[in-house]
Length: 566
Image 1 (cartoon, rainbow, N blue to C red):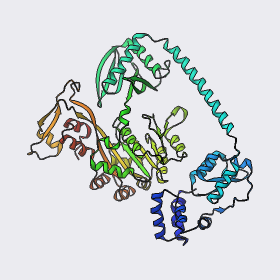
Image 2: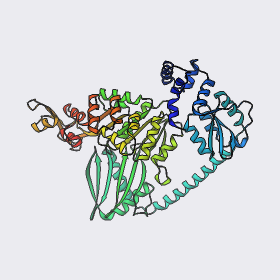
Image 3: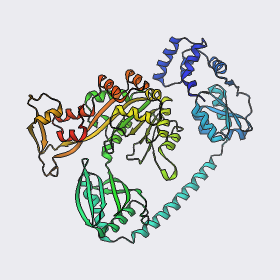
Image 4: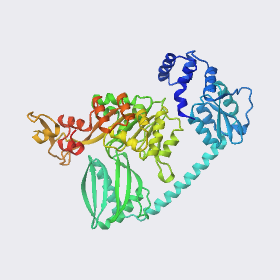
């Protein structure tokens, strides 16, 4: 079914003389508030009857009317479509001719419904028109006798298989534990607990010719903590593999796993990546701080103007909202805070992530499993059949995922995702490079959030000083002006680094009418950027400059984050 049909229904009714342009606009305004279908609104307002809509659809699009009352539907035909799908889309199959299944639908323009019927039945689908009341009456009549016991038996068998698999895994783990010795257990345990206490985001275990280097990433920077004998590498890797349920015998290919442990009565989740190098297997352990994800959008650290802009973006009824930035820049935290804001009882939110980093109550979350064939693209394709209102994709990595996301956005879904670009304007070009047409990018993207994390000056050892001429030039201020800046001199509280914690730096591009037109015309990045600045966008550099001038971070962090002068 063509997507154009859905978009042109109102115009078709106007062109047929059934309603006026003014009546259509009034109905569309009411539809936004009620979330009802356009046809339902028009009927409720007394502007048109259901039969008149059917007549227009028959004449304009070729759909035929069918009357279900008094019709006898064969049981084998009913079995072609599950009850869940029949109720979800208000439809019912009534006739099977060879491989063509005739289906009565309330909304014949719902191509998702037609696709689901086609997939579940294995038949080609011919769509007919029927009233909502007729279809619901037929559903109650023909689906009432379905055998639920069969589904229950299937579930029981699945649970038994899962139990057997769990038992097998447990036995294997117990056998593997026998190869462990107490010293290596204590060593790994101490490394993990020490890293957690030091506010570490990543632990790097790196083998070299004669030693093993242990480094912690704290506030975005790597710090060497200790060196171990090369002899300890094998036992160290084996122990970590056992904890993360990886294959201890496999040393030739990369592996990924997870560790869960308790520290100070808190559940800590860790991601483990094992990579073969010329000196042995290198391990990186990402420590997931769930507290980072359990924040509201007000706690992200945006200034009032950016927060207001973000509010407008997330209130859009449909479209794509993208967070962009390098690895570890807080993109997931931003998306989770938006999901918390949008999460309501009347909204169905489904995510596909790699992996799920934080469990959100009331949100359906799916883990990517490439080995099983569950990728971002295939996962997104499946969750669009789960009747979602809001979809979150962990990352748009390829053209296939981008295309499906665009399709979801233009069919009335709110789509959240991340993408890797340097700034907000270049994200537009990145989508086009993936093969997405410019007019689709312009019509689907509603907002782009580019972000970085900069280190916060330690409040315990911060000192004021007068900015040098060089620093004034970087900040773009009058050289003759007396500017006071701040820096951390180092203390025990910050481990002599001068920094404690990190701050978000944001660049929010709100896709206005002007920017949408530029995107459609395939304008270059600079042109889009300048238009966005005119519309109130602060660049990452400008946002970072403000943090420096306000004494919250240093000129060094500005140089590291956004050195290029605008």
